[in-house]
Structures are given as structure tokens and as C-alpha cells.
Image 1 (cartoon, helix red, strand yellow):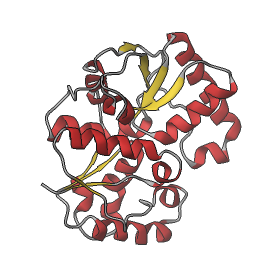
Image 2 (cartoon, rainbow, N blue to C red; image 1 turned 180 degrees about the vertical axis):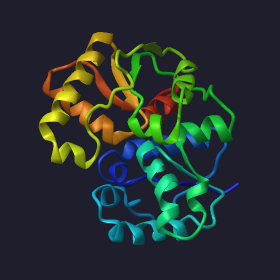
Image 3 (tube, rainbow, N blue to C red; image 1 turned 120 degrees about the vertical axis):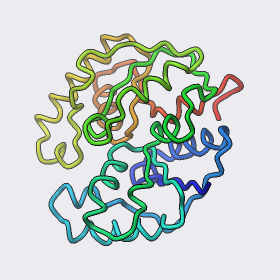
Length: 235
């Protein structure tokens, strides 16, 4: 079984520990992970902003970069959704159909929910818009979190409401975006959790920035970093 990591732009540039955590987690579960160096952006920013012609070569690059892999795993719900929903319209090849968001791969392909993780903190989970509405992740992330030793999962009010990021939406509609982010941050604070986690660092970047400006104690943590943590120490 050939499994490749699609790390995504935001993780590569800003949150490399998430990619490292995903690899550490998968290797702990017996999966040999490849990392094709030719990978680049999936084209989501361009496509969502209306620049289809600029997204097409990126989709084509993705198709040939991962052409020989049985599975492509990514720690990003929004990028997985872009690849699965839109790449088939933009490029030839079937890599899109073999692409899985990390929690999907763990539960649906490997068939595990207990990954041997240890994370002695209170955590609340924010289901991202792409994960909810495009990928249909459902309770997969929650099932994984519920099996983490030492973790106490707190319910988040208005969990399924958007955090306000929405990629270029935050740039084009900053006031609305900030107001939505403030609502999400307030609900997170109300849980009293040590950390808020999601399957997308783009959302966590927006939420984390809002929490920081409010002086909140809660910190943003990608689910891959929680699942990669063990009792013997952080991977």
C-alpha cells in the first residue's frame, strides 16, 4: 500500500508540526508514508476567487504528482474537499478519488479510532465548514478524540457555525469575518477548555488569532497533533 502525504501550503509554510504529527501518527500505526517533493498548492485560493484558469495547472500537477499512490492523506479538510469536489472538473487522472482527509483515512481505511494517543487536557472540537458540508466527516473526528487517553472533550455551543475565516472571505469581508470569529471565540471560552481543535489549520489560524487578541487561555491545536501525542512524550 503506497500512502503519500499531501501537506498543503498553509501547513508547509506556517504549521509544519502538523505535517510532522500526521507522519508520526501514521508511522506509529504501521503506515509507510511517502512525500512527493513535486507537490504544490491544490489551487483552492485561485478557484474560490474565480481564477479557474490558474487553478487548472495546479490540479494537473496534483494528478501527476500522486498518480502512482494508492492513497493520498492530507491534514486539511478544505484542501481535501477542493481536490475531491473540484479537481475532477479541472484535470485528468484519478488521484482525487484516492484522496482522504486524515481522520477519514484513520477511521475508514485503517479502521481505527483508538490510535494510542495520550493528551491530558480539556479540549473542545470545532467542526469546520468543509469538513461538515463538503466532506461529510460527521462524527469521525469526535470518535477519535473520545478514545484519546487523558482527554476530556467539552461540548461547544454553536459548533456547526462558521468561524468566519472562509479563505478570501476574511479578506473581502473583514468586519463580518471578525464578528463571526468573536462569536466562535466566546463559545470556546465558555467551555473552559484548554484547547480547541479542528481538522484545518486555516480555521485554527483565524480562531487562534481571535483568541489571542482577546487574551484567552484556550489555545488552537490541530487534531493531528493531539492524536500523535503519546504518554511517553510528544512525538
